[in-house]
Every structure is written in C-alpha cells, then in structure tokens.
Length: 223
Image (cartoon, rainbow, N blue to C red):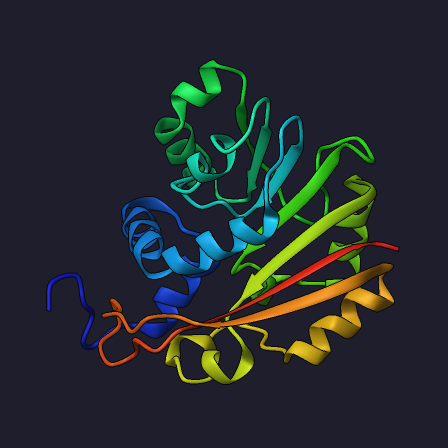
C-alpha cells in the first residue's frame, strides 16, 4: 500500500512523532495531517474559535489545520508553539499569508517554559502532545499561567485502550486513562472538565494493520 510502512522501525517513528525533524519529520507530519484529520477537526470544534479571541496551539506540527481556526471568525489571533524548529519553519511556509496579515505567528519553544506574558490567551489547544510531557504538573501550571481568567484548555489524545494497540507507543509514550488525566487537571486548578469520546471512521494508516483510531477530547477551564 502506498505510503504504508509494513516493517517499520517503531522507535524511530516514535522519536519523529515526539519531535518531527528533517526530511523524515516532514513526511511524518504530512502523514499525521491525514491520520489525525478527524481528531484535529473535532478538537477545533470543541475549541469553537470566536471573534477577537487569542488562541495558543501547542505542537501544531506543520500547521496544516491553522486555517480551520483563524478563518471561522473575525480578528482571531493565533499563536503556534512547537519545540521542533523544522515544524515552525514548515508551518510558517504553509501559513505565510496569515502571517503577513498579522493573524498568525509561530514560535519555537518548549512547553514547560513558554515565552509569553501571563494571562494573555483566551484558549489553548493541544493535539497528541500529552504523551510526551516530561512533567505534567509543571506543564499544566505553565499553561495555567498564560491563560486568562476563565480561559479554556482543550487536550486531544487517543484513549488508553486505543493507544495500547499501536507498537510505536512502547517507545517514549506515557499513556494515561481518562480518569488519570482528569485528576491531573483537577489537581492543577482546572475545573468544568468535559470529556468527549469519538470513534473515528476506519482508515488505512501508514503503519500497516493499525487503522482503528479513537479520539478523546478533554475541555476544561481555570477554577
């Protein structure tokens, strides 16, 4: 099957999923655009961008779905943050028109030390990055810091039972249940937590034989 890996180096793929870099990283990012399309669009629907909001996305990859955020309302300001400089560059190329219109900007930075003033974002969204956070409490406190009062955080992941079917997740993925994620959010000052589970249509993944995907989206606000 075209673009399908039948004898993959799972460890190498896992490293690229964590931090896409170089030619292989660009290829993985493009494949994630396809494989995670439903997940991203559902997350954006929960994000529900509104006019005049300032939105931060953590780990936007090559920025393919940015257009689905900034074009749904007037004066939406978007910031994409990724610790892969290669992804920042690709996202900047793909979204150059939005950048020129001062709607969008991309920044290379780690999630535990965000280069932003406190309380400046209305909403924060992140898709498929949770598994790679090195210190959950520190990350959530940093996200809390840059959110405005009553700000909203949206975290999209594959649920634990779904992730465990993928051999790639044996390498560097931290897998937690819905209840465990909710407890982390509550213990770090988030409430009004809502979770949405979605079973996605079957699709052909780039790792052969693993095409059943599910999405879990958690939405919460500062308490």
